[in-house]
Amino acid sequence: MITKSIQENQLVLDRTEPFSQGNHVWLQKLDIAKIAQKYSTPLYITNQTRLLENFRKFANLLDGENNVYLPVKTSPCLATYKVLAEQGCGADCASLREVQLAHLAGIPTARLSYYSPAPDLDLAVSLLQGGGSVIIDSASKLAALEEIIGQTPFSGKLFLRVNSPLYNSYLSKADYQKHTSHGALTSQFGFPSEEVISLLSSTKLPFSGLHSHVGTQMDNVEIFQESLDALHELCEVIHAITDHKIDVLNLGGGLGIAACKEDSFPSIAELSNALKPKFKSEFTYKMEPGNALFGNATALLTKVITRKSTRGKGWAIVDVGSNQLMKVTLAGFSQEVLLADGTSLPREGADSIAGPLCFAGDVILPETNLTGVEEGDLLLLPNVGAYCRAISNRFNGQAEPGTLMVEEDREIGLVYTSEDSHWEPVIQSYRPQRLNATDEPLEMLSEQQVDKLRSFYLHKQCADDTYSFHDFTKVSSEGYEMTVKVDSPVSFISAPLVTRIISDATVAAVVDSLGHDEKEMSVWGSRFNVSLNSILRSNRPHLLRIYLTPRLNLPQSKKREFIAYWQFGEGDSHGNILVVV
Ligand SMILES: Cc1ncc(COP(=O)(O)O)c(C=O)c1O
Image (tube, rainbow, N blue to C red; front, side):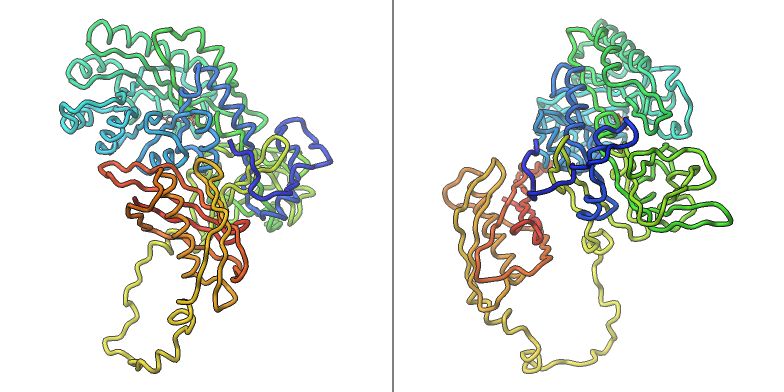
């Protein structure tokens, strides 16, 4: 659990005037003006206490933390995964990258479940051999897996994702359901339940689990009960007719959350009351809640940039839109918008709130009344913890917002910095070609000319740079802190010197973390991110912190990979190194 503040003396939770409404209790404590001033907008704000409350309710429903699998797809933020990983949760992953993110958060392979409708079978085999779970839902991929894995034993568990003929999936109808009815009769997900016996009878691979995911934003508990009944019935037949011994039932995710006051969704407690009496002692039950785990633990802070009126229709243009809220603007999920005093903006009226993007559909609240709303006003969008950042994009050059983590009564700190546009893929992935070179060189510079142009420091003086580590301390299982003393002929610590210092400190941390007293193996830094956002003065001591991630397991690779995050002082100069051992 994150308990230590990254930067001390933060007072964003000392709001004095209460919200005018009783809902969104945790948001009432936020001093959003101070937060906006300190961190700028747009900004996600995640409440760790609320996240843990949701988690514990699911852990209670499933009789154990290990039975709650966070869907990595729902809310990509390593700090939040880590909070849950420390509680013992598992993770539902859909790709190698999601597996790596789960590993980075400290979730071991044995607590991973891999499902993709287009699976990477090498990854599946590697996870099965590492003790993880793999969910299969097509006959062709089962046959291919059987061929690859052959007689090789594995300690993981194989699941079959079942599509049972369920009816009455949603009580109320909404547009977005065409995107979220995963369990529909003819959906691309799952294996038809009526064909399961013939499939399981024909495979040599041992299945020990069944999986079902009825859909997303489900508004009733009956659908989960029906799904559970269907799995129980199927198990009876499987056990009677085949040699497979099913002892784990994964009920997927699907419990919806209210996006606005008008919505009505069952609570986690109601789901628990509906399911627990049906649980049987011979099974372990698992779930992968996305919306219900993450959704209401995060809000998005935004600012009105422009107020205008087009032929009588009032508009407020805010600084975030479809780049983060695609599910609202394009998929038709509703979104509540709160004013700074907690009043919920009406969902009727001639005015609208739009995002900053150059397309007409970038509308967050299509009908409202904006009387009194002015440029510069701050607005809060609650319940955005699921599938917002996850499906974000950089349309119109919009950078990803950061995430501020808070607890019930205090600020923890920024756990996700807002995206630095220098690191965006379009810049990172560019491979410069000699696009502008002419056939004939324009000019050849003599060595003497070049000598006059070069940096004297870089090619000569920097040889005199020296640095030393003091009080090199292991502060946690993954963290090291030290004081670095630097002597340099110039008054600042140059980029190459920073690279030497952080590389050397990382090597020492990695070697120590692997339990060695001496550096007797090669440690290779294969990728470097170095952000020097303020001048680091030389000839004075600096605090350097290094955090090592758990080992990254790559399928088919015996190499060990770590990511070493580093920061000088309070973090203005920071970055990370991909380390291969
Ligand atoms: C297999 C699987 N499990 C879990 C989830 C999480 O669902 P939800 O966010 O509705 O709880 C999803 C979402 O699509 C899913 O596809």
